[in-house]
Structure formats: structure tokens, C-alpha cells
Length: 101
Image (tube, rainbow, N blue to C red; front, side):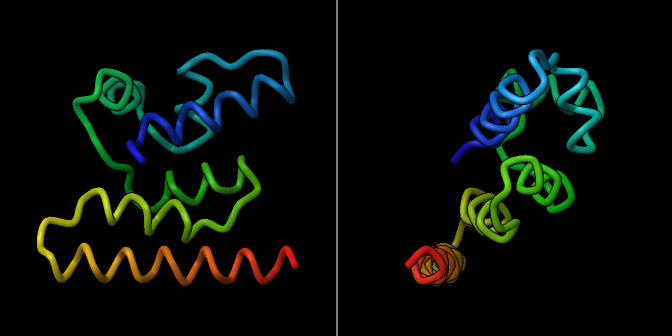
């Protein structure tokens, strides 16, 4: 998933809980500068570093490795790296399903 999609999910949750959320407020909450937030908004930056991934996961109440592995998969260029991050994502999905059962 592109970084802006994760950011939009976090923003929607904040709006749902607090009533409003500007890009500036979201950037502060997830540890991004306004300039970096703008790069994600304008699709000039495709992926998030680990710290914002963790802070977004906390906002969404999900396991941080879900977002971290997703963003690493987005960055992966070699077949080996792509397969590695797909495998990590599948293991996380299986673990999450197990927790929910």
C-alpha cells in the first residue's frame, strides 16, 4: 500500500475520534515534517520510514510490523527482497487471524 493510504487511514481514525485532523496535525502525530507530509500527499515519496509506521500503527491500533513490512515490500526491488517481505506479510496475516480466532 502506498504511504499516503496509511496516512489517510490514520487521519480518518483521528477525525472519527477527535472531530478534525489537518495534515499538519497528522504529520506531528506520526513524526513527519510538514515538507515530508507534503511529499507523501503529492506522491513524491512512496514509502514511510519505520518510526512513522510505528506511530501510524499505534493510531490505528494494529501491529506495527504490518505497516513496516508493507512499506519494505513497496521499497523492495529484487525478487529476493520482494519474496522475503511477502513471506513476512503472510506470516503476520496468519498470526493476526490466529489471534482473532
